[in-house]
Image (cartoon, rainbow, N blue to C red; front, top):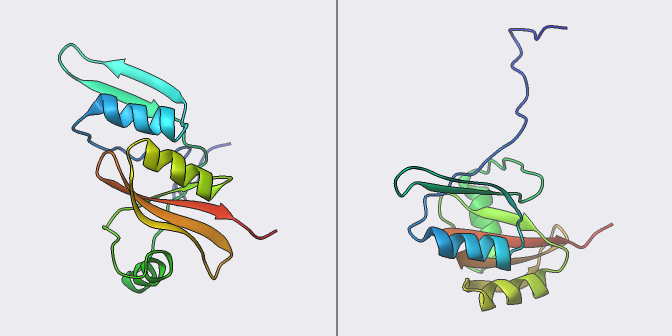
Length: 139
């Protein structure tokens, strides 16, 4: 069966590529503290280094400004989100937040129950990434 040229094939994987100043610290945080296992590590002839971590299922969430402002208001109480924010679903937002703060993240807002029935926390993490940790509370 051949692909229909009018309909592109669907993506197989999404990778968020983040340039970090301190590769070792970023890997330590996301691998050891967040718990994302290493999928691939590669080093070039010079100082080139890349580590690909498995962070579970990837989705692309596209939100307009009003939606981002509303989420910031619910989670943080004010506008704080940069243009890109990474959200990780976890099984226990409180424990994950404590672990990430102890591991070097800065707490922006503690776990907060949202109107859409999740428990969300906001953090600033290595790689200049703002993170949302979320736990689905509904059925």
